[in-house]
Length: 560
Image (cartoon, rainbow, N blue to C red):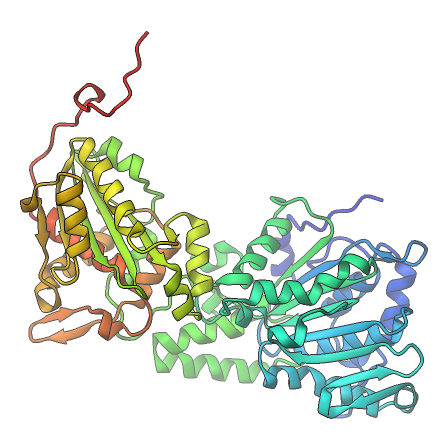
């Protein structure tokens, strides 16, 4: 049997309100049997107490049918085992999760099987448990068949002994489970937890001995840039959907805007709100959505960002706040995939900025090269974090690990390794013959100076202390103008995008200042390093003579 879960024409399908599931149920009889159960479950908190069959939309039936229709009753194996649904807030995710897992519990044949709904908080867990409980209480036959234990948030099938448990997740509640089916609710919140990936792997690890088992990921978009397990699953789902990843055991269903709609700002037109709200007119009240949109628009940029993320599934690339740095609005448009090698190849002079380095800070480095032919500055960043920082800042640990996978951050085991690697990059630029000076925050740079001067032979005069606070105003203004007019091209790293989004501006007389204290818990060290580098490049240093390999005694010279 051959099938594909890719949906290559999803952009036209979603605009035309067509199904995003292109693979029909592999076993139609199983799908029909499951849907007949699912559709009879009753919603007691909806006017008229309709069944799911009466209240649901076809998109939901397609999703449920594919889940249960992937089960081969002859072999006892489910051919599609993992499902990912991204849909906007208020599109009945909690109700749907309750209905899906109740259907699984009713249709299950394995004695003493375990089904889990895993939620990131107690409140979200209750949002899934209460509809399931009410579905049982609203049906006399189900009430006889099921034993509801509200205190434990679990429902037990009296015939098979199988149990549906709804848990607020931690290592203790999900560890050692042998679940036949797992539904993970609000995956975006798990993306903010340092241990989420390992914890959830424990939860669905039982599928190794449960060939009929499944994992379902349900989520809205995150209120900030995706991170951790959420980013991992979202990227994978998009890859499968777009045909870039071949995995027919994974079904992605993503209600999000095509890029062309976002680029043209059409997602701000209410007539397109249906794109990410397949339940618009049912569980999603159109008047409510329009009212919330109006309130967000009146409240300003920050409120609008929240509305776009939760109600329209617009991914947040940068968390732009009211007191944001002006350059943040243009930062992402200036991305150009710049690498250090590209800077070394195209520049006539290079400067380097550095900042940070405390045990719970990032040590940031920023390289700026000047491309005389293109008339452009070229920027590239790197940062280091001690493992201590990941332990002390658990909320940021998933993000740091994502940046490490991206290649722009290094997690170091030993104190001092970050300084040595910082110096390695400085020396790479120095050996090219293009390096002018290194600009650093005068506070707390002792280790860097010692490493560069005493151990690497850099002239002390070439390490410049860049005054911070309001004195950095010139560099801040210079960089924001450069970014706005696209006369600087940068690496486009998610790490720098995050740092730029974290920066907060405070008036200082006739100037402005950006400091770590003003910016709060979100790290900005690589951005401060960039400002330090800008302060040096703005002085228009002389072009350098690029050094050949023959001038570098440590370089390997090829002979023929």
